[in-house]
Length: 207
Image 1 (cartoon, rainbow, N blue to C red):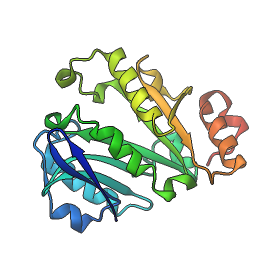
Image 2 (image 1 turned 60 degrees about the vertical axis):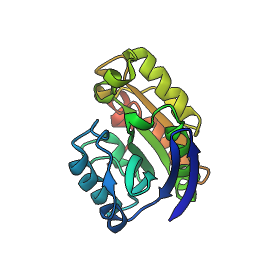
Image 3 (image 1 turned 30 degrees about the horizontal axis):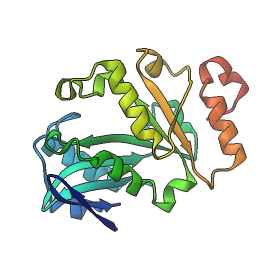
Image 4 (image 1 turned 135 degrees about the horizontal axis):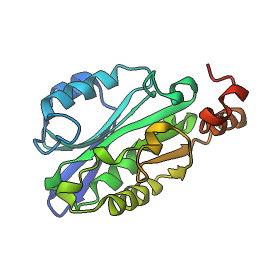
């Protein structure tokens, strides 16, 4: 497990990962981490991810409290991306409102994407505006999208087009992807074809 200290204007933090379920169990969750589900239930979900094939959790810790995290796992089975053998999804990133403005998310991502394992995958993130914390940030949907794309762009994720119905459901939704250094040309071509599986799915065997 990698451990990287982070000094902020609000106190000292540690960025750690990939962590085990046992380590997560020993920590508490900041009450501000409720964007996806209540903190206790989210902690259980994070523990479950650590036991998935290629599942990884990187977290930010203040003493014994998790104040931020990012998750990596294979896409859900219902997703078209699950049919690609080298796609890993950045499933969620969250920082407690009490620690925002300290560049916690940026530093967390830099540590997580320094893991050599990510170079073996096409890492994607599917960003849906209904998950965004616009209430606490005061940003509108377009400002929030720009903030996310700038943040994720710092670790090499770039916006890509797709005909995925979930992405097309709202114009602010976005798919971003990063090709790891060890991803083959064939896997890149397969991913490019899958981006428009609704239009060209019959031309590509993705099952």
